[in-house]
Image 1: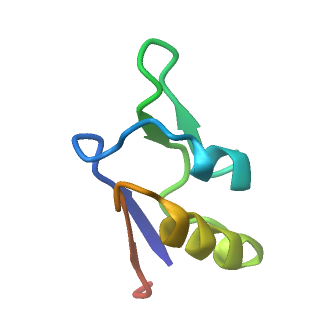
Image 2 (image 1 turned 60 degrees about the horizontal axis):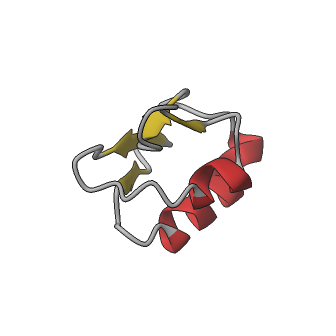
Length: 66
């Protein structure tokens, strides 16, 4: 799995960080998403998919290619 984020779309809700702080973080000044791991381990794939699904701005994109 490959993860990408669109910081221009991000609204700073923080749902992704609450679900998996190993993959996502937020900038302190404005709460915009910061991607920590673009290729998370397989054990995190389910929760990363959930983070993408619940993102209110649709700022998280996933690719299943290796």
